Length: 451
Image (tube, rainbow, N blue to C red; front, side, top):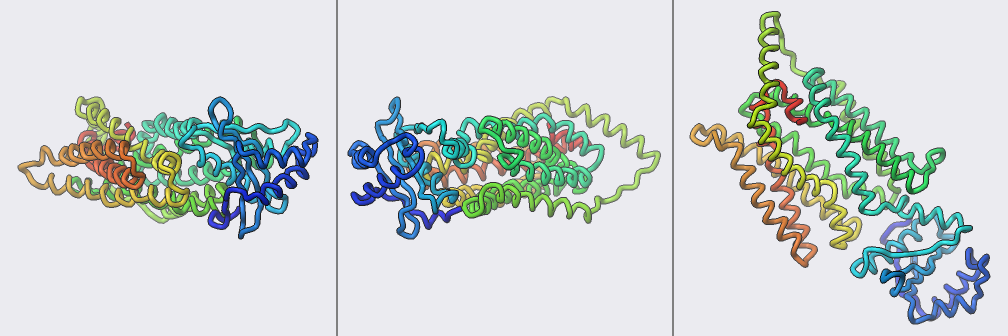
């Protein structure tokens, strides 16, 4: 894999166009198709076409010919070729990525054709950027994860209530490791696939990953409800939920750097390392022990039964609806913010990663701060009723204003900063939501968080 900064793609000079024609005439599929050097030279010098040359350390290594008029109003990649000594190094993908960026404001589509007998080229185009997944297909992958996550939330929460936080979170970590590594096998060896079956395989793995992840926050909520006294639960929930910001802040720059230099498969495998650390840590951590006598066992069963009734209460239903609306917007930020900055606001791959991390760096502060403020307000008896309402009311309102500003500004930097602060504000309400839920449902907090 080439280093991005080592590759330059520049408009071809007169001499480079001649050289490109010679390169095409001695390569497949032009040789098999019988296209002469004279014909190719005429194409390379045609003023209707754009010709660009890829250079590594000022040495030409690839060429792409573009037709801006294209097909059905969209630009067309007429020819692309990488010199033999530079193949399998990401240069072809870089040339096509360059073409996509060049015409991104003109058209969302770009066309190319490939000869049916040119198997290597067909394989390359089918796997461009490995699998050439569109935004729609990527949306399906994100949704596959969310579907598995959502469908198994309630069973996972009930499991946390029954088994306890430690056992469930240790199981989750091991499942995450196994399924994450399995994703890296798509397209390799016996797992060699076409783009359609690759999409299917990824969707299955993402669905399974969603199932594996579904107990994470219900089990964490159960732990906070069981192990932390009520007056500190806002802060405790804030610390737990700050993991959203910490993970999302570290992931884009780290994974992008590994992906650029080592490829996406290594990046995926390395992303399983934190889960391995968590799994091993839970083997050493033991939950606080609570002695249960035969007498208070009956009381406990009665309390659990009463708490289950609270899961059907009006307050819990309204809280769940409100959290659903907040969660929808948060989901858009968590899954699409980085892609939005790169594809719509045209940040470079790594600069987009760092810019998207700003939002999550801010949430590392805002999420615990939201819980801390709610706890402090709750300690004041005169405003206790409003203590866990004030943070969501202010946070959601300000977030809505910043989202509107970020979406309509012409400046990419202002958009990124506005949307970053909007993310921090919308997620600062998480701890008050969770703490309120725990006060409503009591000992069934695992199931309550899941719902």
